[in-house]
Length: 116
Image 1: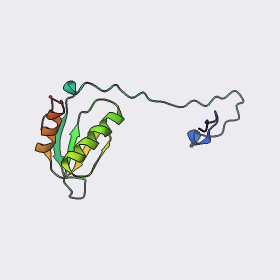
Image 2 (image 1 turned 180 degrees about the vertical axis):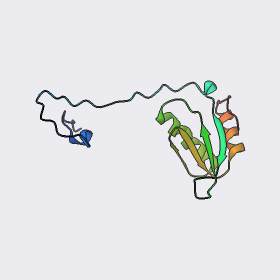
Image 3 (image 1 turned 120 degrees about the horizontal axis):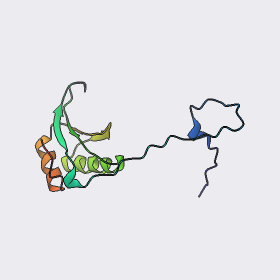
Image 4 (image 1 turned 135 degrees about the vertical axis):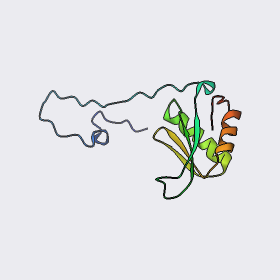
């Protein structure tokens, strides 16, 4: 396994050169919030058409937790609905109008505070 160097240039893309010999590069690392238990998640399921080129999508908003957990929930919903989608900007996007099915899937998975 290759060990990364302390001065790995890929982590410093966009940094301006410094002539200060005492300068120490520090990365801004944001901590991801802890994922709430399923029964405490307040998810809201809605349908949207505007701003999407006339395509209908089902949105799941209100997920509180890490991006990895949100992606795994999006993957589950996409598989159960048999469609494509994505998890970005704090919401899960499912292609097509699948509101009743998504609400049913979420409630079966333990997300009891889900509203459609």
